[in-house]
Length: 252
Ligand SMILES: NC(=O)c1ccc[n+]([C@@H]2O[C@H](COP(=O)([O-])OP(=O)(O)OC[C@H]3O[C@@H](n4cnc5c(N)ncnc54)[C@H](O)[C@@H]3O)[C@@H](O)[C@H]2O)c1
Image 1 (spheres, rainbow, N blue to C red):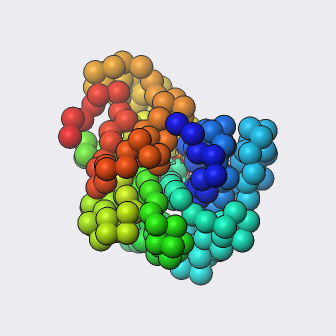
Image 2 (cartoon, rainbow, N blue to C red):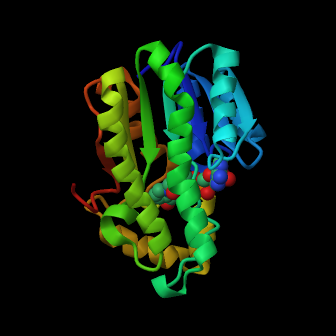
């Protein structure tokens, strides 16, 4: 899959999976705008090392004004928007605990970043995609949504909402030739996963593997193929779908 002359926006791209998506789009010739509340300088370097052009924008997906800056950066630097990957989320920093012990503040923050953030970014790119005659939006959900992750109801509910939002957006935006799909990964060994599981990391990865049909731990590069496919013309009549990239844990 090639992305020459394609402009891709990736949110939450300062590290982890977002940075890997940036690397792989850049490798295939895309012009990449990366956003995050963290500094994206390292990701910009990764894009440049792939020989591609990139722009980093400090942005908070929960704010319409801030999300608009991502779209503005894409248009000012590259003149169009073809792909939006809604990857930003609260995950590594969350407290995972029984549902009745979660804080209201954390519940609200999770919904705000993981769900409202997608809405804000979709609104921000819509005029440019309409003008372009189409586009592709890929929302990052999680196995948590379809499996029902225990002790993380805020995260689980937010990632299930991502699947619902994907379906609703796909219905509304099809008339503009804008496709909207989701990717739902199983546990991937990122910095955020290490933060979530702490010293229980190895045990939880063992339990996770025991439920996969393909018993291999997932790496960041294993998730990229589904994101690239849904972003490319190879999936031009696929919309509203969720692809599980989970080693065969949940079959939709
Ligand atoms: N790593 C996994 O095991 C796993 C599994 C399933 C789904 N996911 C999802 O994949 C995505 C990336 O996961 P990761 O492991 O790389 O986690 P990560 O925490 O490293 O990445 C999330 C990024 O989002 C950014 N972010 C947070 N709030 C933001 C905001 N308001 N505005 C803009 N950016 C914001 C963070 O700074 C961070 O860089 C997330 O959506 C996560 O829920 C991860």
